[in-house]
Length: 74
Image (cartoon, rainbow, N blue to C red; front, side):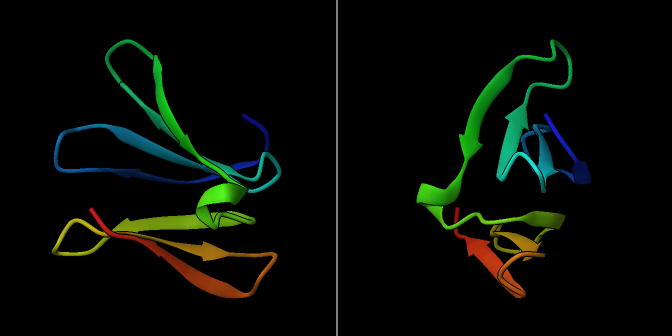
């Protein structure tokens, strides 16, 4: 992962890592370090910086390149 910035855990304990220069959000198993999934440009991720989860489980991220806030519902 290149240029990692934001980190957040979801309700299931998975670690989400924003990689602004890698242009992706990586979902990891923190116990094993295994990469479980990625959100990339085809999911609307352009340059993710900070991450947070809303009360409904939606993932939000600030997007440095687009100057917007992205959202992915559960």
